[in-house]
Amino acid sequence: MFHVRTSEQNLFYLKLCTIALVIFGTKLWVIHNFGSPVPFWDQWNGEAANLLLPWLKGTLTFSDLFAAHNEHRIVFTRLLSLSLFILNDRQWDPLLGMVINAFFSTVTAVMLVIVLNNFLGKTVQNSILFTVTLLWAIPYAAENTLSSFQSQFYFLLLFTLIALWGLLYDNFSLKWWIGVLFALAAVFTGASGFFILLVFLVIQLYLIVIDVGNRKSHLPTLFISLGIITLALILIVRVPAHDVLIAKSVSEFMLTFGQALAWPWIKNPWISLLLYLPFLSFVIKILWQSKKPSKGELFVLALGGWVILQVLAMAYARGAGGALPQSRYMDILALGVLVNLLSIHFLVQTGLTCFWHFIIIIGLLSLEFTMLWPTMQQKQTQSIEKLTNTREFLRTGELHLLQKKPLIYPQINILANLLANPQLREILPHRLTVAPLLQSHEKSEFIIDGFYPSMTKDQYKNEKTLGSFNRLGSSAVGHFESELMTLKHGFMEIQVAGYLGEKGLALILMVEGQSAPIIITPPNIAGENWVSCYVRTPKQPFKIVAIDNRPDSWFAFAMPRSLGTLSFLSIMLLEQAVVFLFIGFSVLFILFCQKVLCT
Image 1 (tube, helix red, strand yellow):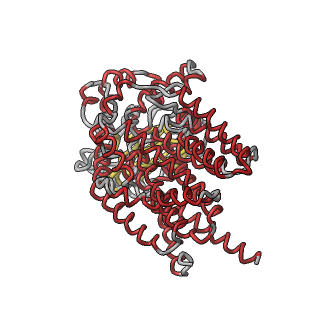
Image 2 (cartoon, rainbow, N blue to C red; image 1 turned 120 degrees about the horizontal axis):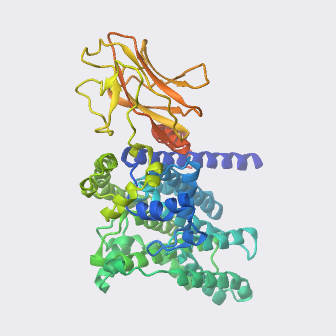
Image 3 (cartoon, rainbow, N blue to C red; image 1 turned 120 degrees about the vertical axis):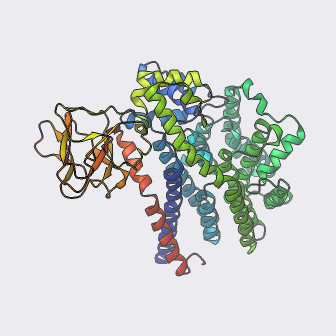
């Protein structure tokens, strides 16, 4: 019996690791293909102006971390941003933040599966695994995935689920205190962070009514909930500028409310009546029987109530004109699908879940390909435009470049002043760095922009490169040796083109006091394209030496860009996104072939 149970546990954890690979790999793939290294919108004031620059100046206070950002107290988002900045050799990197967000999202999915497996047992294990993978892997909430500042949503989900799990256990036990701690922490993720305690307040009042013999046991959670809710209400901030976003009528409110509950069929609000029928039926059943729910039932009831409260707030605060729910809210809305699926399990425990999955999958495909995928493709184009425009402004200082669409911040003059700040320029993402042209004391056959004439400069438009393709074409030979230089971050990126990697062509670092050179080798022969080479930055001053001893070949290189250690690691992870997906789907395929997932 023990051996069977151990085998089942090992199999469950294998499945869990597999779906984690699929979820994490999918998010990395989205970031790698559609993410932009340029900070966007609230990042310029929320991170740069009000967090990173004050920290660099030594003026950041403890109370600044708790200050309101719009309606929200985003303490943990600020702490994460500041921590990543410090750990990343004092370099600001939105792509790094996106990778960390992807990790947090994956951890949340894994934790949710473990909790539900413990509460509900193996009978719905595969259904939960499939549903969570589906809801977390499909990139419908790209607005969160592609913005590091949206970590507030990931903290909200993670802290809420931990609070929900912990508060279901006995009063004053370790798990209960963990639940209380994370319930309090959720208040500092966003304005709606206390909603899980509103749900618990209702649940505790219900339990006090029906659990006659144990009424006193429900009071600690009731009073803790009241206390934290009171604190949260005191901390709420009204933003008059956002009044235009509030629903102006009952019809606008109801339209947005219905569209959100109908997720993923958001253009068909009436479908919300069908999609939430299982949860409403489950609530009615519990009330009708006046019984004390199990931990699993309480978890689903509380989670469903939390989703509905979030939708109510969304429909009011962002319901002007009956607006469709924005993609940043869809990570929350997706939990409604899981809630209703589990409600079906509690109600009937039949194969109805297959039909439910079919409805959701068709809705997701429709949502993805008619609305979200075109938006992501647009973001891909805009990413290049944002990078080019911002880099050109940093190079030239011409204000009209920041006025070009897509805007990266609506208040152009404020943005221009920020980008003119020397301290901010020092910490910008490495791809925004305007690298100066390397100088040499001697004449060199490596000339400015010495690459094949039909090539472009990739994203580094209008910046100088050096290459051995000159007036003699590829038959030119020679070398280049820079002056001594230093870079302040842990790694550097050097883009190369041509045929570096072939015999007779070399790009090396000569480090002061070090006899052996550091050889720079591209991951593949670039040809008439640009590829990035990454190398650890020497601690001592160094020279860059380029050698072309071949009369039948050439290569060119861009100026080195300094990047933080964590930025380098995040780039390596992003480049391995397909590997994560391949391993994850391969294991899933093997498990499916062995009929493991059908047991």
